[in-house]
Structure formats: C-alpha cells, structure tokens
Length: 626
Image 1: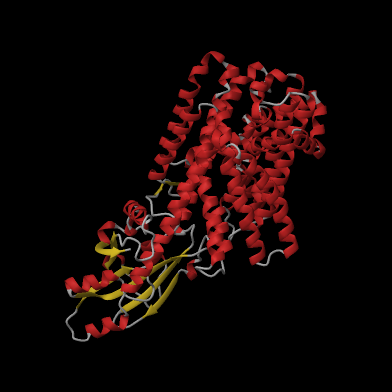
Image 2: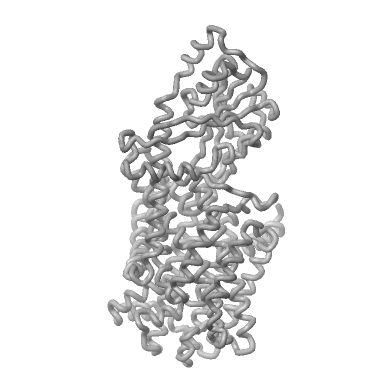
C-alpha cells in the first residue's frame, strides 16, 4: 500500500470512528456545563465561577481523556483489541487459576464490565432526552411532548436493531463530522466575541474553584465527570478502528470542537447569565435553533446506537470468556462480522431505558445517576492497566506507580463525588452493576463446578478400549463428533450412546472448544489433533474471544492432516445437562444453586452457539448434581 492509499484509509477509519467512538462524549456539551453550574442548588453566575468550572472541564478532558486514555491506556491492547474484558484477559495472563490475586483481578474486571451495563442504559436515555429538551428553547409550547417524543425515538431505535445498521451506519461518520464542526463554529463565534473566557485554560482557576467552595466544590466534580463520559469508548472500540485513526480523530477534530463549544457556552454565560436554562441551544441564533435541534437529535441517536452496539460486543466477549450464559446472536450483515443483534439483551436494554426516562423525567435528574457507572469503570480500567504495565514488563516500577497515583487520584475524586449522589439516582447504576456482577460471578463459578463434576464422572479411554475388545460394539460408516468440555476423559454422551445403541461410527472425534484470552487465533493455530486408537481422535479447536466459534465452518475451511472430514457424513453429538441441586454439598453455595440452574435454562444450546446445523445434531440428555 503506497503512502496516498494509506492516508486515504486512515481518513476513512477516522471518519468511521467519529460515528461510533465519539457519539457519547460528543453529545456531552448538550448538558454538561448547565449541570455543573446548577450543581447542588447552583453557583452564582459570576466570572470566577464560570471560569473555574470551564477550567475543571478543560483539565478533565486533558488529564482523563487525552493523557490517560489516548496516550497511556490505549497502549495496553490485547492484540489490537481494547475494552474492559480484553484488558482483564490481558491482566490475567500468566496468573495462576484459583490464586487470591487472580480472583481480585478478575473481580475488578467483572465489576468494571458490570457497571458498563448501567452506562449502556443511561446513555441513550440522557442523550436523546437532552436533545429533545431543546424544545424548551425552540418551541416552549411543546414542552408537554418532550417525554412522548423521547420515548418514541428510543422505541424506534431499539426496534430497528433487528435489521442491522450496515446501510444507515455509513451516514453516522458524516453526520457526526457535521455535528463536531457545528460545535466548533457555534462555540468559536462566542469566543471571538468574548475572548476573555480563554483565561479558563489556566489551572489556577480550577484549583481556586475547588478550594474556595469547599464541600460544594468537591460535589461539583460529580457534574464535571459528564464531560468525560464516553472516554472508555476510545479504548473499547480500538479493535474496530485501530489506535491511530482514533487518536487522529481526537486530536484533529473532537477535542478542539468540544473545547470550543464548552468555552463558547462559558463566554455566552459571562454576558447572558439567563441562558443558563439551556446554554447549548442559546449558542445558536434563532433561525438556526430548529436545524440544531434536529442535528442534536440525530447525534444523540447515533450516540445511543454506539452504546447499544457496545453492549452487544461486551456481552459477546463475556459469553466467549465464560462470564455469561450463551444467548442468541444473529448476524445482520453478510459483509461486516461485527454487525450483530442479540434479541434478549436488546429488549432488556429497551425496558431499562424506558423505565429510566419515565422515572427520572429530565436529563438533569438522570445526570445524577450517570457519573457512578462511568467513574467506576474508569477506576477498574486504571487498576487493570497498572497490572498489565507491571506484569508484562512494559513499564518500570516507578513509572507505573507514578501513573497509577496520578490517574487513580483523579478517578477516585470523580467517583467519590458521584457516590454522594446515591439517593438522587446514583443507586441505579450501582444496583444494575451489582446484579450483573452477581450473574457473572454465579455463572463463572457454576460452570467451574459443572466442569469438575463432568471430569469426575468421565471414564478413561483405556477402559472403553477394554469394553470394545469383545466385539459387541458394531462400527458404522461416517464420522461422529462428540462435544466435550473435558480434553482428557470420555464425554458422558459417548458412553450413553454406546450403552443404548451398541454402535460406534467408523471415526469418532472427541472435540473440545478452547476460547483463549486473545481476540483472534490464526488459522494455522486453530487445531490440535491427537490420534488415539481404533478410529478415535481427540481434537481441540482454538478460538479467540472475538472469533465466531463456528465449528462446522472451521472444520470445512481448513483440512486437518490425518482426519478426513465429510460434512454430509458427520453427526454431532451434544450433551444437555439437567442440573439438580445438591444443597451446597458439591461446591456451589446453596443460595447460588437456584440462580445458576435458572441461568442454565436460559442459555442457548451448545449446537446453536457453535453454529451446528440442526439436522446434523443428536442431543443426549443427562442429569447432573451440582
């Protein structure tokens, strides 16, 4: 690829990143400055306060987003992939299973991912609601329709998920490009009129704001965090667009546009304090307010879409890494692998988002709930990034400790300032996070108990060979593939089949799927084959946590030396366990047993998860006490 083609590709990726990565942080100017200045009953709208708040927003964007995420955290990639679960997998690499430190690292990662779901519910609600609230400025007579319009837009957004976003998604980047340019122009015009607002760049204004206002100043940080919501997306979407395009978009357009918009709102308020009702929409002249309302609504829909897609992606990773039960996954595009739709998750998210809008009614009320989810995930990311920097030898100890001290101090200050808002709505993301954490921990622990129980019940291969010596077992042509989670003994399904039918196929493959802690496994490292005897083979198929675990396709597209494979002559045998409670006797606490059994019933079948055609599957039932 020559230099010109490379530059064209970078520009295309950077444009794509605008529509996916920056939707959340890009719509924050709709409400952030207003919430900061009205925090805790409001501050006097005097120059010292306005400059102090702007200075805090400026340095939050520089320290938290630019320095922490863009410069440092994005270096901690898992083979190019980012996100809290990819970072957790990277941090766990080389650690001993069952070790206390391993459990702590895993708990931090799972809690960070769990809080992300609270963010996934709040972002579409607060973004769309804040845009539609522009009606207060544009057409006050339509105030009563803000909630119905918001609900209609959100329902439409979630209903359309089943059709995918491949075609309309091509518009996301250009629309967000227009949005960021509009932010810059509107804000820049006000700065030109009142350039004195640029004094807020001086950090002394931020420090003075915090110390002069004491406790009220500390609580202000809970609203300042609204300016950096969506920072995690820069890291989470790194696998889709790459580190460089995301950085180019940030430095060249997003950061300058955000700063111009915030400072422009500040300049406006310095001379028109009455605009505090909605300083963003008051930036525009009257003739431009209706087009701005429509553009803002489009931008917030795109922000909501990005978060929904992110929730699908995180859930898929969690399923592959065995933190969540298997759910139905539909691919909505023949060309783009990442375009998926998860019906169960989609309707759960919709119900949660609608409940939020109906309960909180305004974006100001929702803002109190927003910060805890965001800052909790940020704290988890900082701790995991420190672990990666140290364990993989990428940083010296003093460098890692210094970075940890700076970033964790900022993160904890923002987190604690939001923790005070538990009664005002902060309880919501905490409850969602706790529930998701409980589900993930229960599923992970329960599957470990099931794996151990199956391993205990498995018969050694030599014993089967002894039984077959008498010639009582008839062999038929074709290949039988028995799926098993145990890469050593015999799967229970094979023993049940042999017991009832007294027949074995000419070739018997004992197949184990291994989802590794890397995003992708190269094709030449996909298979591990061991020929046993009497036509038996043990095959381990390796996938990354971002790969689609399509077993038939993997077997068909890459021939395995020593194992002839004919799709039409192959039958897959899959065991389906019916779990029975042991009342705490076999490793799972008594209170977790019914929850794990319930999750197991919700889980889609292994044959569906591994994309095995229904007409090639034989399901064998078995009871298992846990």
